[in-house]
Image 1: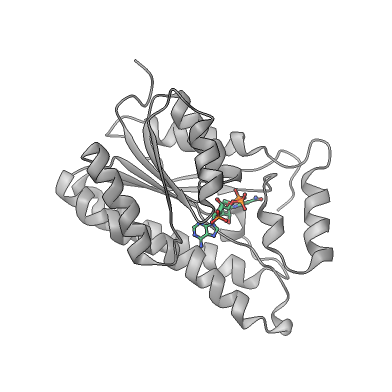
Image 2: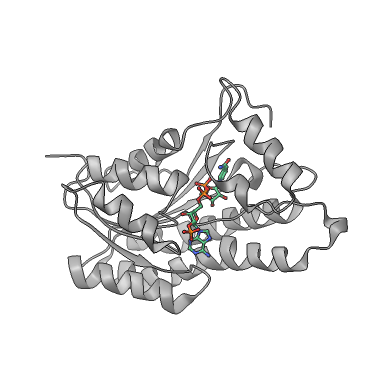
Length: 247
Ligand SMILES: NC(=O)c1ccc[n+]([C@@H]2O[C@H](COP(=O)([O-])OP(=O)(O)OC[C@H]3O[C@@H](n4cnc5c(N)ncnc54)[C@H](OP(=O)(O)O)[C@@H]3O)[C@@H](O)[C@H]2O)c1
């Protein structure tokens, strides 16, 4: 029997990077999955690359509650229960506050914070009824430390720590676990969400320096570890950095 055999897991933000690597790892470990993101073609490719795995996919924008709810309904319809949701979708269009990029700030609030809250709102009534469940959210080292140019991104990630701790305290009697995964630099497509091309390329180069930057699989390992714990064990947070990272 594999480590996650029979577990039903929903992955939001599954089409690239940490989400994609996690879907592959969960599939290896025998979990049943519903995976979602906006780029449905990428989801299709991932599902088709894992022919032995039980995977359903659906396009969803996490900032739209109805679309998130449809993903959860699909999981219930196919598998009858939900053991875990990985709220991983996020964007990072960093820029100094003085540039006043209010549209980007709004997008970060809508995706990084409301996207996670939409996931929580959609699964919590089901998990409370089941008297079991696990909500996992991708936070960041940027949820612990603020640095210039990233005030709003850091703000969204700090907010997730408060929300996930509140969730833990409120839902522990229902046997619902809350886990934050806080990576440092990971080599993914996230740099593409920075609209300032110079800053975006700088980040791209830094994360691909020899020995610097985690692979998405390194983070996926932590997610699977948290999901696979026995029911009396709850991993509240994992901070995972490249060994050479300073902040
Ligand atoms: N890379 C890093 O260094 C790093 C460090 C710390 C934390 N993180 C966090 O890790 C998470 C995953 O990012 P990543 O690094 O793996 O980057 P990525 O490769 O860009 O992945 C981001 C994922 O989020 C999805 N997404 C973005 N907006 C969405 C929306 N509105 N609705 C649904 N899905 C959406 C993307 O899919 P679609 O575009 O197809 O919708 C994609 O699947 C994010 O929360 C990020 O903040 C990353």
